[in-house]
Image (cartoon, rainbow over all chains, first blue to last red; front, side):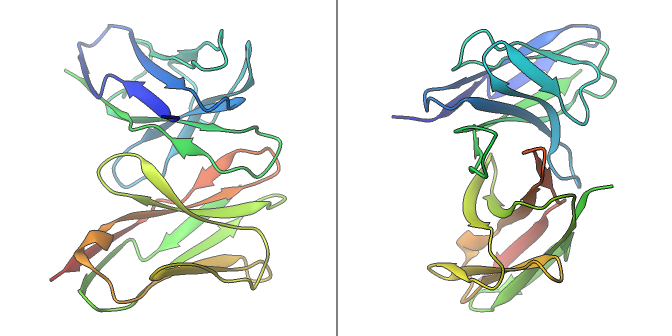
Length: 114
Length: 110
């Protein structure tokens, strides 16, 4: 089945630790995105990648890092520099970012910092 | 500053009622507007609207875009408890990124 997978579903980490969230897609989509969702706020863009080995900062990139070594994978690292990392993280992909294609979302990862 | 505003923030209705959700936007070089339904997990796609005045329908849901007045509405007729969710509106603008509104939380009671 084609789709987007994220793992883990729930993640707990201690303050000061880096943690990496996985996002994989087998839709052959060129573009991938990472969003953060907080209560009472809309989705906010962290990073996006239009093509392999290239990515750009979104609106709230500070404290996060990404890589795009393979077309199907776009992992997000939440570093200790991120001041308020507890949130719901959503990964999305679209066929390409040069059109008005719909973005399709993964199931999300809920990160809690203890 | 580009922004997408949804109203109301929250809505509580009884089964069978009809609801209208609003989405207004101010963005540079608008391209498309999307509606998503979000239950407990990730948003699921409902509609993409690019042209003004053309209604899109899917069962009891329908949506229309007004590019002159810069808004869209999402209508749900004969609501059911399964319609309870957060409905997100998002706009694609010239940089091909989505800007999301804060969402409208709909609760449908039997």
